[in-house]
Image (cartoon, rainbow, N blue to C red; front, side):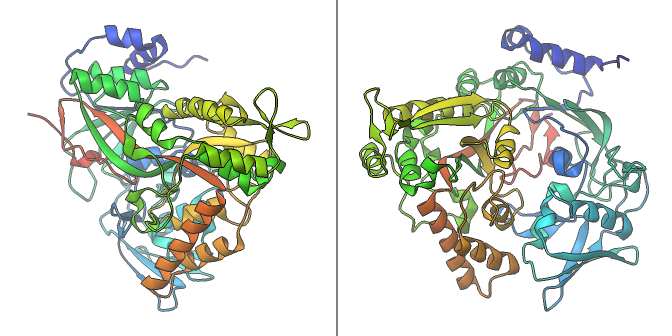
Amino acid sequence: MTLPIHPTRRRALQLCLAGPAAMASAGSPAQPAGAPLQIVGPWEIGGLAPASSGYIFTRMQITETLMEAREDGAPLPGLAERWRVSADGLAWRFWLRPAARFHDGTPVTAAAVVRCLQAARMAPALLSVAPVKSVEAEGTGIVVIRLVSSHGSLPALLAHSSTMVLAPASYGPDGAVRAIVGTGPYRVASLAPPQQVEAVAFEGYDGAKPAIERVRYLTAGRPETRALMAEGGQADLAYGLDPASLVRLRKRGKVGIDTVMLPRTVILKVNAGLPALKDLRVRQALSLSIDRAGIAKALLRDPELAATQLFPPTLGTWHNLALAPLAHDPATAARLLSEAGWQRGADGLRDAAGRPLRLSLRTFPDRPELPLIATALQEQWRQAGIAVQVNIGNSGDIPLGHRDGSLQLGLAARNYATVPDPTGTLMQDFGAAGGDWGAMGWTSDALVEALAELTHGASSPERAAGLWAQVTAELQSNLPVVPIAWYRQQVAVGPRLAGVSLDPLERSYRLTAMRWRA
């Protein structure tokens, strides 16, 4: 059976398939009265399960979580208007907003919230890393979470999109999510995974009414297409722009460009379990061969993005000013490779006992800068005598390669504030078993113990500072992942939109703060 396609979606899909030339010829038509605020980005709606695509719905302010967060990660009220933790840190109580309603008009109850949190305790949702003993309803308006051991990062985990709260009507008889019935200031009007969701203002919201009535998110895979949609007046906000398009947009001046430094780093995930990469000297040589300043300037068009360590300045206490910065030093890289037994052969490649140093790197185009950086790395490593084959697939190839052991090198952009407190993400990435986007074939007992102590809650601010320094130093010296560049979110903003501000934690598009220009 063939399903009908909404005319607006059909036109967007035609433009995406036709490519940049068609977008350019589309011109800059005036927006019809009552047209929605159009957002275009590279992220597909991979399903309705909160752990897979919940971030789309929280960013669109369709769904809410118990907790929110300030830009620095400090906890703020969300669906829970207040909270309290017991003296031993083992019992947390969250009082729900009494006037909160689901989009189907039913009241938000503690029992409904408990159902969502119970589902979020299952992997791969981040709440699964917390030592939760039970989640219970206390009356209709209080949620109680009891822990096996103290976990100071619990509020941050409860701000993650995988814990978003849905109405009982969202679930089918089998317990799977069949619809998105949330509590936010916008409700779903139409949903066409994997490419589009449209939302309208929810009249029953217990907060301020949004100034913009309708919003729509559309997936467009090519960064050039997203830029041309913004330039052609067919997108009010365009995310995930490539450097060349940004230069063109700035030059032509038809749209504005808003930027914010994100807690995201372009990293090289290294399989340290391979015989060659198990040797720290080889991992150091890979790092020393990278011209980060050249990549940041030539490819990212922003010299400040050259990563001197894993965590960017936007992560505050995790950015360790005492660390010796990562350097570009081909001579030292050559010496380390020779010491590790990799001598240059007649073909210029490093060779050890008849085994050329050949590696395979996987990356993906969802972040348009990644294939460009991969090509630059390939050449820089070739000059060092290391042959690297670049394979551009999809983002799932890297975690798949981690799980089946086939990954050698992976290039990705990792968000270290997936939850407002990076500790949970670091436990995922650098725990004893490693992680899909973190360590592979490498572990450190001291690092795991330091992260565990931070997770439970350090005894004092001074102790926490010492643990942060220990974690960053361990990662810098052992290079289970190799930092390459920090990340700046750059968004094209159409001329009819006002009140735009970017969330450095990427939790929300902040639509309720926006308005149409007069």
